[in-house]
Image 1 (cartoon, rainbow, N blue to C red):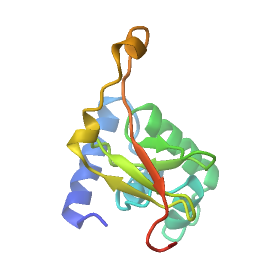
Image 2 (spheres, rainbow, N blue to C red):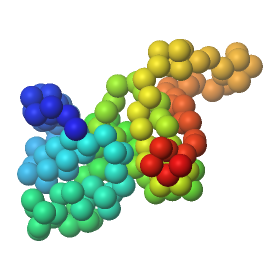
Image 3 (cartoon, rainbow, N blue to C red):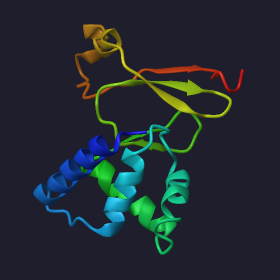
Length: 145
């Protein structure tokens, strides 16, 4: 969990960036962003909805879907889709990679500068412009072992 001060700073920056991009800072957008920014679990839309609805019972699942689509489009969140699984969302935009459990689907962040410097051979990049990449390590978490 994020510290409350750090979370408040992230939400403030988010609000400012929304305004700069011409997006309204609505209660629904703030609720979705706050819950997502407060967790490291990389929730699915449905999991995030379950976190939000106790505090915002009038929020619909469709609103959470649409809000996350908007956030991804404007670069506020990233979406990851482990092979064959539902999309998961992350408000942590710092360069990082993932450990993915093949049993329960949990995702854990991995920070390693060496992984962030991986280069493809020139023959693979001569006609392809790489904008971003993420390394996913797949295995079985300690809870599932």
